[in-house]
Image (cartoon, one colour):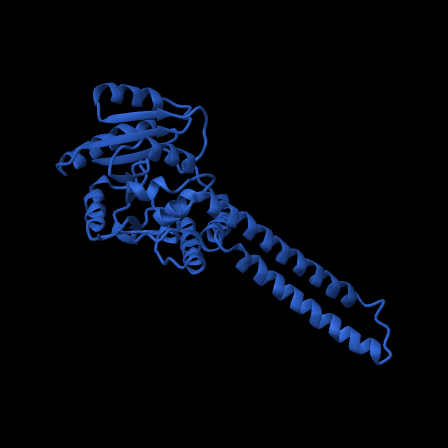
Length: 312
């Protein structure tokens, strides 16, 4: 069964044509399917349109959020409601082409766990395209997962991949990275990107600022979640070592008869050593918390989190 999750916010003119296209494409696949539309607190007639379509088409399910919670929260709710073995995400503005869904599913059949779309010819303003390229390049460099387009709304994944990932804030754009950090196989496929026909984008440049902050969160949770001392300890040792060098230099000056009490370098050296010790302490406390959590999980749960396949 295939589940298509569509987060929408004030997309009244776009949603009905999009659902008609989705029905046409999914009927052609020959599998059972459903469309889960998550209305993220729309203030126009989007929900009324969805309620009518739900009554007309039993395969269209509608979830209405109490308020505008953001795309990540809407997707998280949609993943919880989806019942399919394979889950496809697509934006509700009509710019993502539903006819690309079979190509994404075919890529999954090659053995991948999550396939992201790549808007190779993007129908967006020049400034957004430039900033998006920079954002994708930095994300790929930091995360180690090199994709051309992290934030394409068109993606396909196996259901068990998504069930283990909690989305909040702006983490939806890092879905491939989150899957990659959990050991799943990630690929991308060039997809058609269409001009926006109705309304305007509600995402401004500030989303990229939030995105870089979320990148730090994703990197920490992915690379250092189970070894926090490696991060905090490395920073602490570096700062502490610089502080020791500075204090050693001042000690030599003091021994040779120079006054050091009025030097700002003395304050800097002491501060670096103290901050370094604090980082080391924070790393050790994090290790204790992580170790306690791992012990509570039990060996079977820890194994299930890592094992891909068992042959007996």
